[in-house]
Image (cartoon, rainbow over all chains, first blue to last red; front, side, top):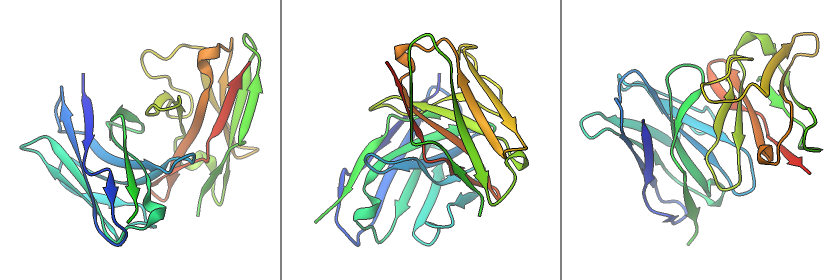
Length: 116
Length: 110
């Protein structure tokens, strides 16, 4: 049974870079699209982007200029970096894996607050 | 841009049936598959319907999905409502290969 666990700082200062890692356990990192999705407090879901098992990435056009998602197959991890954060980036960040058209695996989510 | 619109909230009594709509604008709902996710407070979402009407293993058949091209919408129907179905429900599809979500519907069962 595949399990995902997000990790990273819970507090980031405005204008700095948000960095999160998702560790995959209990299954293969191959043949899966590894995604980041976020949810501002009290609001809906927003897809950030994904990285495939080959390392190619696709991003939400509204975030593309600030986001990088990368894959570390040897450690079974994938990561999110978001630059120049503002208070609007405060959210619960979920990592998720999709085999086909839907998200088969989800992490529990981690709250990241942007504040000085 | 293709967008998905859901009612903000709905309520229904236990044992009844509720249908949550997801209306597309700026494109055809039939152009890409629609998925539905259930999210209980404080938890990650889980998939209840994929590819318009398919159920992942373990999802009860009280949950069903459909598409209506005449209204350009997809729907999630939950029959025999249980208090445990009280949650937020999100539809999801694609805008030119990018993932998009509807705004979510808060379902109250009381």
